[in-house]
Image (cartoon, rainbow over all chains, first blue to last red; front, side):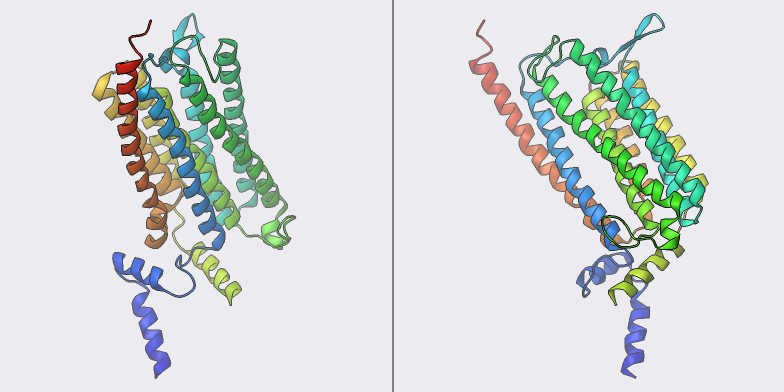
Length: 240
Length: 117
């Protein structure tokens, strides 16, 4: 009798209303994030902490830009490229944005195919994602080289407020590092998918535990986050 | 027990919503369109409040699409959704403090240093 009552209660609670579901999840014993594996929950919590890091960078950028008495260099002109006989404003940054968005699209589809157990398509899409990410980093290296040749340093630049250089190198450098690690992360997981590690239950090198296809989704979360951060950098640093 | 939980969580996850590929392609297309709009804001040289509001609008729409669809937040349980999406709201407090601070710094610079040759 007692048992069936408990069972009934669980059934009744399995489809609670919006707010009630949050309260019951958080008030429950042992785990608050039901139906979410620890791997995914930890990736989300890591991304939350990363959000604060990038927020601090963007806020310090805002602070120095708002408080300087010297004119801020116009990013539209600084990042223009001379193509087809004329200066096109911000064109390299626009291309980088499209490349990163495309990589996010291929990653989202890789996750989908991973859950359908389509190893070949998953691995190929992840490799395409990694390739686009590498292209992004390459374009960023080109951009850095161009700006350094033009005399941009963390302490000075030819066009205006000296803080432009320090915030530029700090923000895009930190983001580029994230992309680089994302590419490495993608290649490692793509290899595991290709080899069929998640079907055979082969144990990982570092963890000595067998993984599953959710690893692809967790890798995807990181990759989409990198794209997400770029959306904010693009808006605040390049367009503002 | 913990393993059994993990396993059931995994099975449950596999069974819950796996959106069709088409949805991703549609979102991808929208992200392209919104990025083009953002770029056009600069290309067409919109200035002032029009520029800033358009930049913020396209930024928020893009961020929303990425989080909701690409990162699957739209299909996660609310306890996780709010645990991740609410804490960044405190950044706005920091934002307010730093706006106040930068205005003050600018004021002191203009009042005491800007007159020097």
